[in-house]
Image (cartoon, rainbow, N blue to C red; front, side, top):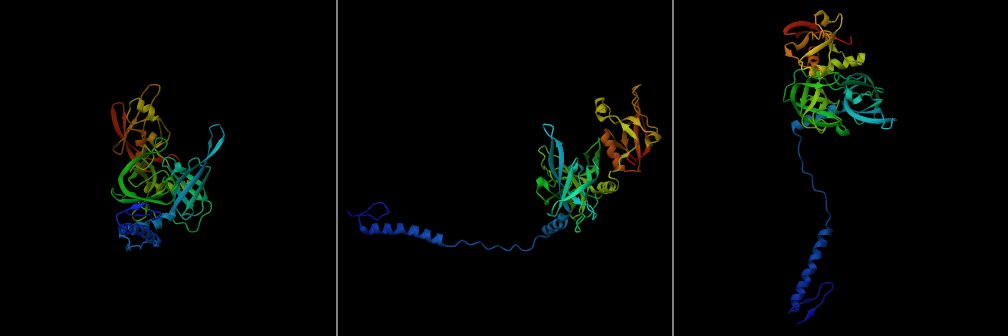
Length: 370
């Protein structure tokens, strides 16, 4: 038997030298093939043509391109008391949109509440300092005015919320989690929702949508498929604080009533009939359904209608409001919502209960701030 040694391969013992040579040559071919593959230059693959966008896609792209320059990224600086008594500056963020060419920007009241300084960034430009010219916590709306007004401002086209229908496609543009100019799409999931705000008040006619709305979207526009403003995104309902498919927007018909007043007067009209209600907590603890009157102002529509308040000396409840325009009223927030629905200068029919008797009276809604 002959032995063949060929470094760096291990010792190979075989019966014939021909077989050893064959095995050796086969083993040499493997690294040669690898080297051949490694020497080939890798190149980018050719891009497959896709053709034109679908008409639905093109419509959404156009909507975003037309609307996004009108959407604002709002940042705030707020001074708060620190843990050890000193002052600390905290920052907040939200969204908004251009209302008119004069430099007014609409957002949520809670976005700018207590802010020392406010900055507005439009269409990826530099932040512009702004001032708060009016706020309405009852509607969670506020109006800012840019200190330097660009010539290229593009107000959002105005739509209507009166004729919205469940199932319509809607789009939200805002800055969730600080991610600027984010577009989300959804449907009108429900209409005529009620949204609690401030001072026992609720915004009536609120739009419910499943478009993804997250922290940072507050104050941004809700648009219809024509790119028109139909609502102001203001809240989500979620235990985690992130989108869970239920978001709410203040209807644009209400916004279009409140914003001009904020621009002109710095405050919004406050519908009422001239009564001071007793705290809802006290009424609820007493097991009473309706609005109990603590006082009736002189010369007010409520006084003219003969409404009587609670008498603490005798314990007489007086007139308890239990309905407005045929709709039942169980809480103060429901009552206020019905007055909002009717509007300033409207006449409403109240259902009131005194003792065991009920009656209906007609009362004019006035602006309590007028």
